[in-house]
Length: 310
Ligand SMILES: [Zn+2]
Image (cartoon, rainbow, N blue to C red; front, side, top):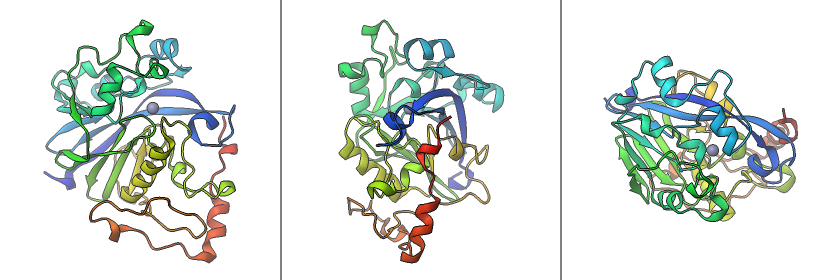
């Protein structure tokens, strides 16, 4: 029992067509689109079997109420667990939700024995959404029955270890109460990011604007959103964003031998952080600053969102 046994299995529940400028990158190439996977994550700690988010519904429901959706070879979360991982839905002890947007909560009632743990501000917003977000939270006012109808949640409103080795911490900005989830593993802290970032690339600079992070465009609050991206950077040895294909397919299971660990909170000369604080006991985990003579080559090698469209 303990972090040596902990394994994370990414589950792709389908694909959505997202805009590179209005969703994935602030000041990115608006009007150009990219197919994005919608992952949720099954975590077995040896003691508990949990899910972090539950992903998409079937293609018909997704496309009818939301975005153009393709299932391809993906299953819904409960089908994937049983058919591809051999885990019966009744074996799930808890579902930890990063936020309650429609593409992260479907089929939760399939897990009859699970506790439902979610950020307090997300529960409040889900049951009484700001009108701008009726569709995002599947408000009954639009004639949609939300996935969480009739469910009771356990609320979390500040950083806490909800189960041994599983820590939720606030990362608002994408949504009002968004929280990311740190999973402690033998190889380091793997942070399941929800939508606090969409891709690993969000954690690297936007050279044209001199931004230390090329943050996503989809925020209810850009100030909190930027702060949350810094928070991920300080805490994660590896990130699993819910809509990043590459980060989730490097292995069927995480951690794995040879997993590329990221550098936490690396100073890159010419690219300024905005917030100085580090979470308790993590200052010593900051990477050494990038040598000035390496910056140009690093920046030139970064992926350009202009090149990412389908
Ligand atoms: Zn999402």
